[in-house]
Length: 110
Figure 1: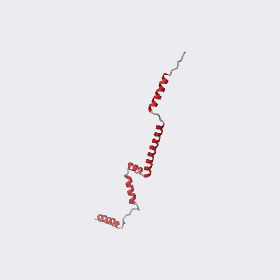
Figure 2: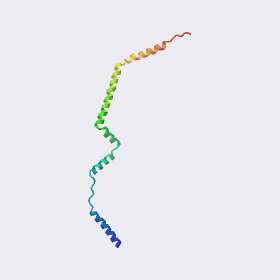
Figure 3: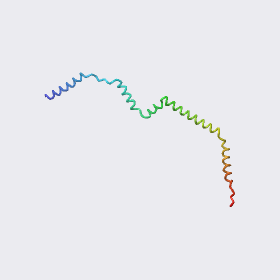
Figure 4: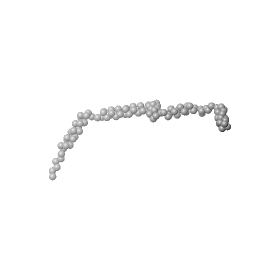
């Protein structure tokens, strides 16, 4: 019996010691940091990549680069088309050069 009463006294003492405790409070901005960590945990690499691409500086830089490359290609295309000859004239010139070279043999006499 003494054993049961000592156990009951220990239990009562433990429960009474809980009455004196105050409620635990977290540090300031704990919930904000916790929610930021949870949000970053669930972001995969595609979400991070799309978040980077949709930034205004990156988007405008990409658009500017594409437009510049198109203008440069158009400029080169106009420059070469203004200097080139018609296709038929180029083919006939090449054909006549080959033909004249083929029949233009030297007569070598021993």
